[in-house]
Image (cartoon, rainbow, N blue to C red; front, side, top):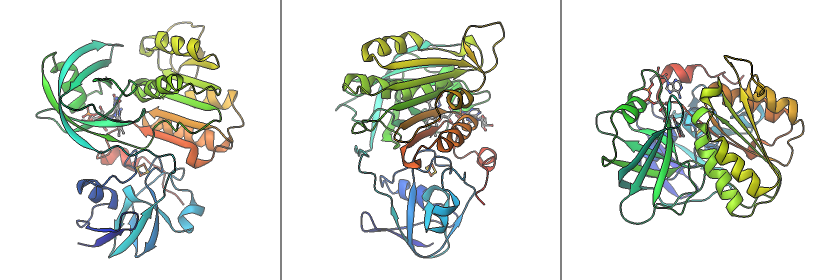
Length: 343
Ligand SMILES: Cc1cc2nc3c(=O)[nH]c(=O)nc-3n(C[C@H](O)[C@H](O)[C@H](O)COP(=O)(O)OP(=O)(O)OC[C@H]3O[C@@H](n4cnc5c(N)ncnc54)[C@H](O)[C@@H]3O)c2cc1C
Ligand code: FES
């Protein structure tokens, strides 16, 4: 089992055969920067200082060929071939809250759409510190632990999550069908680096597909509360009218902010509609052609994030300014194989 030296913290870990550097580091409780854990977002980008790794499939947007040639790797896709040393790329704006395991009580469940449930949890003990846009891992008895993004701004003792029911999904089905007010569960977090960068003063684009609105709402609430006054363009997508939610909350935030627009987009409306139609990435491409100097926050299903990533990078966005959470089960091998391999 190869040893991997993590240069940022001057610590060596042993990576079990066949495992990635990121999964071994997270198992050791190390706060390695990451997002999707599946080679799609680039948040775990690292410099390979010595040694060799086998790279599993990844999106060329997460790690463009020139960066690969320059010695960068994705820790979530890198299986060490022998002893290696790596350093994750430092992000001056990244926040680091300690990861905690907590117990919590269910204090509310409410359907937001036909398949998205608002789950409210009161955490026991000290307040849960996180940055807007981060997520926690929920542990329900009898089903696999899964990640869900906080939908409210920090500094409250009640956390809000938006869980979409995935057909045949083990944990999302349990959240919808089993959890009741008064139930208790365990959660671990905060995790993820697709959080609001408070120091950024340029324009912001926020794009949410389905329950991807959860972290986007958290980010927008914090941005407005912090008095961030730059232009904010918000796009929210669903297939049909019944898939949209949170529009009143977004309208209230836009009214407080004064320079925020909200554009709902329907991809498959079942009836004539006054809304924008088509795919989210196409609406963004039509409206915004120069994203140099912007920050983009996005969350939703893999196919949406992949299409949006291509569009925003082609419009001049710097890859370091893209903060994405891909909502799928990273362990799902079939899903991971859908990724276009960098060439
Ligand atoms: C960083 C991060 C944050 C997340 N935040 C949220 C959130 O705030 N709200 C939320 O609803 N989800 C969120 N997710 C997704 C969530 O963690 C689970 O992956 C999702 O609920 C499905 O888990 P499951 O156990 O129900 O399905 P599984 O039993 O894992 O999957 C069952 C089947 O559904 C497929 N599948 C898995 N995920 C999806 C999907 N998203 N869409 C379509 N098919 C899928 C699988 O390929 C499999 O065939 C997040 C994921 C990540 C990585
Ligand atoms: S590319 Fe590695 S965590 Fe997203």
